[in-house]
Amino acid sequence: MAQTYDLTTGNVSKIILKFFFPLFMTNLLQQFYNIADTIFVGKGISDNALAAVGNMSSLTFLIIGFSMGLSNGFSVSTAISFGAKDYNKLRRSFAASIRLSAIIAVILTGLSVIFLRPVLVLMQTHNDIMSDSLTYGYIIFGGLITTIAYNLCACTLRALGDSKTPFKAIIASTIVNLILNYVFIFPLDMGVAGAAIATVASQVVSTYICFRKLRTIEFLNLTGDDFRNDASLNLALFRDGIPMALMNSITAVGCMVVQYFVNGLGVAHTTAYSACSKFVNLFMQPGCTAGFAMSSFTSQNYGAGNYKRIREGLHVCVKIAFISYVLLGAVMLFAPTFLAKIILSTDEPTKLASEFLPICGVTLIFVDLIFIFRSGCQAMGRPLVPMISGVVEMIMRIMTIYLLVDKLGFKATALAESTAWFSAFALNAICFKVLLSRAISGRGGRQNSGFTLHRRKPVHSNG
Image 1 (cartoon, rainbow, N blue to C red):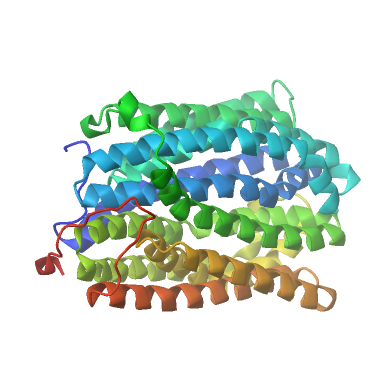
Image 2 (cartoon, rainbow, N blue to C red):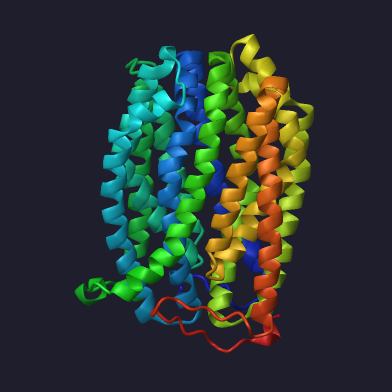
């Protein structure tokens, strides 16, 4: 038990903050080496190479986001079982997650490699960046199994309350990524292929560290019997995983449509959008991390029956989101040109990015809150709500860019993001409030397709 962390007892603020900060540093480092990749490509190769890598971002998120959603969904059952102290079901759930993830990794790798070129053509990828986009994509998707393995291991550790091991893993992988990026791009002059290989290699390192930690947790020592195929268990895992995976992929489709319109404006716009996306992803990390903390905290306490304690956790996570919004939104609003010049080296993309960033800086709070309320719904075993919100987000993003791009040009992309964020936030917030109120009043029981997760009786003294 010393190797895991029980989030169902103790001071709520202290527990969440203790869990939050290592996880935040993990996500921050992940974004840091993503931005480092961008800087190496933009400064070390060319703006066209940067546009090629950026052009792949929405397509990469379509595939990798799907696998991440599955891993997050699978880990909900793990966290609820851990909160209920049902280690037998926890082991069976983890074993089934491994088996299903391996099958999905093979399928996604094959599909992504086969359909990469046709999809890039549909996205209006410019001929100047097509070759580099293909090179980068084939390598990233060829190493997809390492990404899926890392996500599964990291999500399982978070479900057990361990946010420190993924942090250590990312420290090591970041160092590897930076070294390999420099070596492959500068001395070896490998172009975008070098950046892609560095990314895959660094993920191998982080996967190994997380997997090694999982092997030391006694109640996770799996046997052959744990891997026995169980249709009801598979159905229960897919019940949580598929909607979350589809939510990410649906969101990615909306981003791909935006990318389609951006590509139609020209390579300079594609380059600017790539840089802006990196900063938006970086500055949303406190909210994203608060969402991860909310997920693990809610799942464990939901399994333990501590429903009122979940509300306390929500208040702490929302405060984290507002503090980060005030600080980081202000940077996007008042220093957009400074940010743009960190990555970009030519005037036109820099000017375009300076128009985009302030708009998203004002509305950044909505995407921060999406992570928190969406994670709360998912953690209570209601993944369909976030999936529906993903559909709403996609529709609003596409409608906005379609209606405004001819009138406002590149600014329409920022408005598309902002309207999508607000719509998804509103839906998730309303649904979370309803679900939590029903759970507290005793009307929110979870049915899990035959794989029943017994919860302990509510401990009202904790809330």
